[in-house]
Length: 476
Image (cartoon, rainbow, N blue to C red; front, top):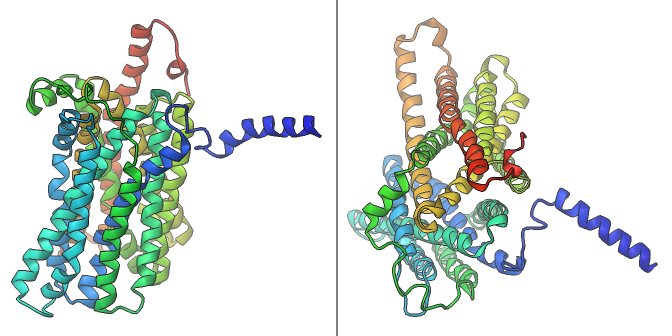
């Protein structure tokens, strides 16, 4: 019986990593319990994203009767801090601490900013809706609350990803990154379901409880995530990592043409994937006559595709796949996905539309993980905070601009179509959507052209510098 048990255990050790992409993510340096605790900061960030971009978006417009234009401005305010992520990362690289902490103070500051913004946000929203005070005062207070939460999210995530890079062994970093992204997605999915259930029978009191409850959960989760993560080593932070300022470090990071190429590809690819964010559900309703419940499930379908991509990313990167190549695979999948969605209207196929939506999520997941792992490699040239901050700044800014451009381009094309400027071939209600999807195909194709040489350069550099042939040199 003992021999049989040993045989089964050995068999499971070989099967588990193949079926569970994160089964072997832990290491002697970074245990699984410690890693899962650290990933809790992604739960709080995902909860904030859902609350700002989803739940409050709908509540302000429908239940509180706030003008949609003002709601759009409020939701966009957190993006003001997106370009500052590189600076935040640089500051965390060079933070001088008496006890040896670099990342923890920034994660804690970000946590307090999120907590403070959520603490008074519901009262500001109620005043802004005209219930209980000067509307202008409510608008100013709501804008400040959204700014605080946005600043907290960007600070927490930038420093948190840098901390994960610091404490994870280099060999397991790709799997750690993928796991952190899975945690972010799980936090968004669970939060969206929970907020929807709590606010089913909307009252102002429930809104106050939900938002302030989110503030407390953010504080608790991030404290647990931070506990005993960064070692106390005063000598490590006695001097800044960079003797010069941010501008010098930024120029050093961008001195390598590969950095500029990667960030440019990241911006174009992210915009290419996110222009559809506010278009898929209206497209399903107007073109395919899908019910509200059916279009709502599209978000879950998109998220499920992204979740599967994270698992595959961890497995492929561990097997030696170049991160630039992985990002290229994601862009290629996105091209196929948007090509499928753009021909849905004449075929009137819901199955084709749903398959395209799933592939969009899958391609976006591969692209995100690939570019982030590539950015982590830049930490050898600059600090991990600066490198990951640069990635986050470009990614968040491109997301906001992509969503704005996608919606504006669709409205502009509708005006041209209604005026007959584009001719009789573009006279249907679906034409404006299809043209936006085709423009996204173009952006992703340009992304492929830009990022393609990076994979080739990386393989050649590895052979030349290391003098041996590693896993990244074999064809995939």
